[in-house]
Image (cartoon, rainbow, N blue to C red; front, side):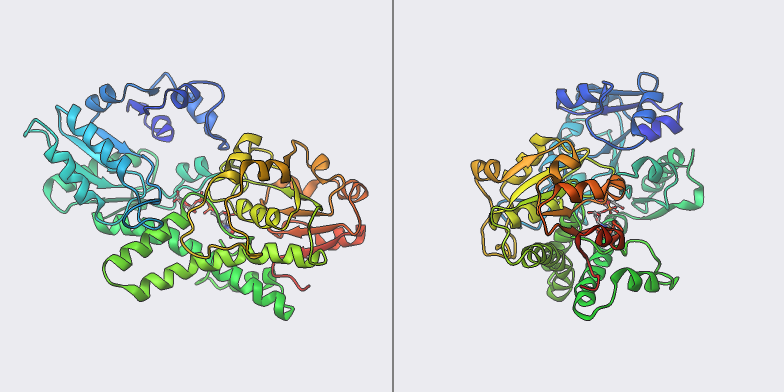
Length: 460
Ligand code: UGA
């Protein structure tokens, strides 16, 4: 919304939320999320044509176009628990919109939703609006930005996708929304589709991105078993223009609020329409991701002579990727749980994630939809006191590493490549191990310092 306000000075943008604390943060110098370049964009238009407010009903009533960007988490209980998207927030938003609307509006699905949500929401809107002359036209306009590069992605998107009904009103609404984006996005990049295609494209785009990561991660296991190097393999694959080089970085596992949630949602939709084999296919993308996280933990434990009990291990990075403070579904949570279950003493450093957040994440119960066990057979969750006993947090990577037997790189923060590893080596217990879950370090150099290194998908 900030980017729309920046690029379209003639449009008044109101961002509304019921949460006063969150809105206060958006109105402050310290935004509630860390995203490179976002503060500058917000600052350029806040108070001009961009406002943040808790007065949801007033701003919704006044709006011509409403973007609904509420949470659609995976359902934790009831029918479809662990897989289906929970649309409770969406339905609540639709009821509120219907109850305050006295003029016709375009409703834009921005949240990632299951296919055919527009149909269900349309019913809620129509049946809850007192004025029969008010018309709601629903569009699907999924968001493809990635965290950490959001501003860049929004400024020059590969494409903008708008799904709408093939009726006169539907086409007019698609053109109205397209006109907003065309103020900075070339027209040929604004793709039009029917509603269901747009909804399904979003789920499939994320599923295919995640599938690439699981594919290369599965090959990383084979590389370790055969002496191949996954980075060389990925490079060779990526030069085939049909495959392309992006999203082929082997990792400790993908995280983030979207990939797993959207695939589970896709799996649920396939199962609902009786496509069991298709559901299994996509399910395996998540299974490989869990396998990869478990494999990493096993590698750490077996590398350190089959025991990490009582040993200090420094965890470098907790966010699910670099340049964000977001920890949702971060592989760091599973890796830390696996190591805590083997009695390790962890010291965690992340440049953007707060101590409270890390403790909250490690203590939070996790929905066990599959693979309920950690590699060492332990069950999560752990109690708060277990976590506090086993985990400390440091605001300095050197302090986190001092006295440690091993370092585990979980997030690919740029600064990790530039640390003074001579200094770190001198401060560690020997033998000093590095388990590089992102392949971002110079292993040759580290070995010459004296480290025993492990890279994902690297000859052992
Ligand atoms: C993802 C998609 O990339 C966006 O297009 C989409 O809009 C977004 O989800 C969403 O649905 O909101 P995001 O989760 O922010 O974006 O971040 P990604 O860059 O996709 O990374 C996801 C995870 O995959 C991270 O844990 C990352 O470290 C991992 N990853 C990524 C790899 O392990 N290897 C790679 O080669 C690339």
